[in-house]
Image (cartoon, rainbow, N blue to C red):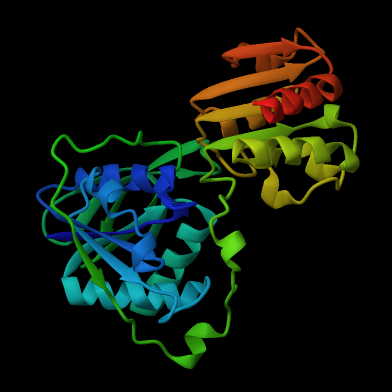
Length: 320
């Protein structure tokens, strides 16, 4: 049996959420795990993918498909699934992963389940699933009946665990057969922006809340995120005030993040926000209030004014 995994990248490396999806893929029984990467073949992290159990890497180069076109990506996955006889196609439960697999379901007429935490083959053409519903408030048990199972993996549900015996990996350059209609919706990314991490895949997230003070207060956070190779996230109140776009919101009704480091600046830590950042491996909170709820979840805390702490931290990082 073959399982295909759509791999997103963080710079030149596989995104952590994709490594989590690969880890789940290995649990689907005696299978070969093929990964699908949209990149130049020279930029594909084949060894890193092999370390997480990938046996094959299918590369779709920009010469065949430039930029992000969700329907075209799905068409490429459909062709590969048919070519390899895949029994399942999965991706991380990011905005991009959910969008591409939804298109794949529409193209193939197959059911698709989003944000799964557990998938177990149940013989024949069925899989037993456990998945998040209602923004993670409920876990649903379900059975998927389909010749090819399509699902995404909840980003905070599976730890990325390397394979005990890395696979011998083969790299294949795949040229998908695309129709003109597949390219109607396409985001053409510049080389400078192509490696930028998304909120769901970033290894470092610098979060800002009401304590930032307003839209202009996010400039130092942007600078700090750049120095740390991360991205900026925000609390719900920030998007409600219109200071930053909703796509940057961390929380139950925003994006669930799983970075190595979450630096929460001026964020009180309402339960909805904690639901979104609980998957972070390390949380550092900067807050003037020693009783802020987020401090109970932080590994380290700085009780102080972020407008003083952040510039000092930037200066210290630049001096190094």
